[in-house]
Amino acid sequence: MRCVELGPGPSVGVAGTAALFSALTAYLGLALLASTLFFAPTAHALAQWDLQIDESSAWYYGWGFPQFTVTNTSTAGERVTGIEIYIGDTGYYFDYVRSDAAQAASQVVTGATLLTGDTSNDSSGVDTLVWGFSDFQVGESMSFEADIDPGWWGVNARTILFNNGSADNATVTVSFDDNTQGTLTLPDGDAGSSSYTFLFPLTRAPEPRTSVLVALGLAGLAFAGRPRKP
Image (cartoon, rainbow, N blue to C red):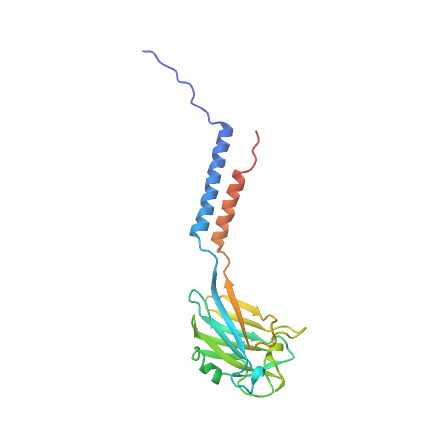
């Protein structure tokens, strides 16, 4: 019987190994990016609210007693748990809150508590009104009126809350039951308007897992595409 001696098999070599590793790295990078873009949660507006400011529902109070209406416009069921309104121009203050007529037209009447603020008409007041809520659901609105002092006739919320020169503009902070919170500084606008509406969408940052996957995918593609020595 004749024996045939078999030689060594084909050798991949260092260059071939590097090319294979680069191809696998590129594939892994693309796979990570694809899974992140198509399967990971995306960042989009969820907890959001609208604010409308009008003159008082009682004509004789006018703009010295503005009416605030906050509407929960969230898209994922978040409930509003708190509202804070800071007057900005500390030369003035919120004397007291009149909630009877305003809240009668509000969808949030029960479960609303004035945590900081005055309900009596006197010479004292606060710079920040704070409301707490137990059941402020999506689609509902909360209305209240706040007296701005000092002064009576001639006090104009449109040039105190904003359009007030060098003084700070008012800020509104709304908190939700998912621990989301956003603050809006009221921008200057038409000082002669009869009504003002401000929109505030809040955006969520991408989850940490999503950011890590994106970083790994990009790193893999960068490694695979690096220049190689001949």
